[in-house]
Amino acid sequence: MTERFAVAGARTLLTGATGGLGQAIARALRSGGAELVLTGRRTDVLQPLADALGATAIAADLASAADVERLSTEAGQIDLLVLNAALPGSGAVLDYTPEQIERALRVNVLSPALMARRFAADMVARGHGHIVFIGSLSGLAATPGTGVYSMTKFGLRGFAHGLRQDLHGTGVGVSIVQPGFVRGAGMFADTGLKPPRGAGTVSTDQVVAAVRESIERNRAEINVAPVALRVGSHLSGFAPGLAAKLARRLGTEKHAAEFADRQKDKR
Image (cartoon, rainbow, N blue to C red):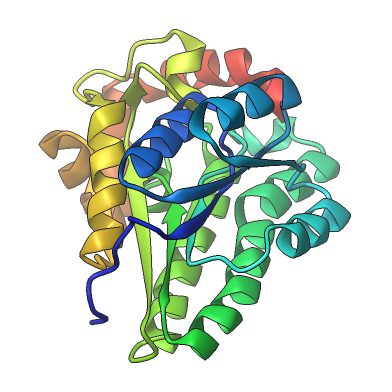
């Protein structure tokens, strides 16, 4: 394990800063003394947020390879990289076009992986740094209507753990924080739906606290969800057939269809 990482004074690049969860993470890191570089697609939200936090704003679309390259160059030297940007990816796989699947992969997996690889090289050379991936419990368990999203989050989780092993002993830490259903801000909250029966929710404060803990204590993985959802997600890992039957009994198929309908425009 690396030494504990201090957020105070760390030059920090945060992706997906314009979303509700991204804004909460940005404010928490700034209150901890981080020097922020914020990025997102929505310039009408990005610049005011950057101004309020004394941060640098770099507008970029992670679906664009050129934008990712430009962002990585303009951000300069980074001590802390928080990869939060993602597309929902909800809905049945057969409802997706090949282009939509490719876009989800690029935003949720490929661009974060390329950015992590780029900034990690400099961090290793300096012997100091930390990288945090914001994943999802959908990276542990697939349910109806999450084929595309789970593909990306399973991949992100695997990459994060593999990278952590590669960087062991270099002074650079790697963590992944995986929330369940977050109330108040984020993809789920934006739909206005209730979680599936028995799943429960967590607050943005709980997710933000997990992000801080993952950085400062170099935690490999923190799953942020009520106990029942965490247990169910792990059950899916070693008994996927049984977990799928339980999910269907809880009415997840109907919930997935409603969820997909309200997020269709974000594909």
